[in-house]
Length: 90
Image 1: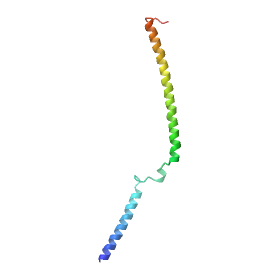
Image 2: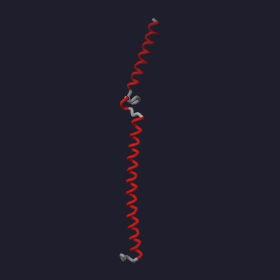
Image 3: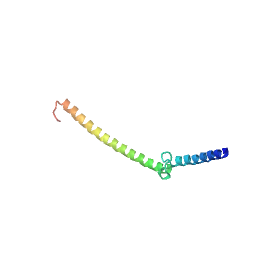
Image 4: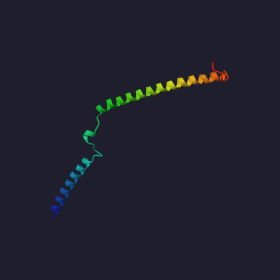
């Protein structure tokens, strides 16, 4: 009788272990599917493309800021000129 209890315990432990491993590996929160994994050889070109896009946008923003600065400087000079001439345009 004790042999059957011991054998039943071992069988239950082995089945429990198989169940736990199966449940662990089927949990997609811990183990994403292979099709969802992004590998480095895919990431590197994508990151380079994103960096290039950001760099281009930064250049465009800098160009716009430079244009605004030039207009602002021009208008400041006009205001200074009006102040110097007491509001008379030259």
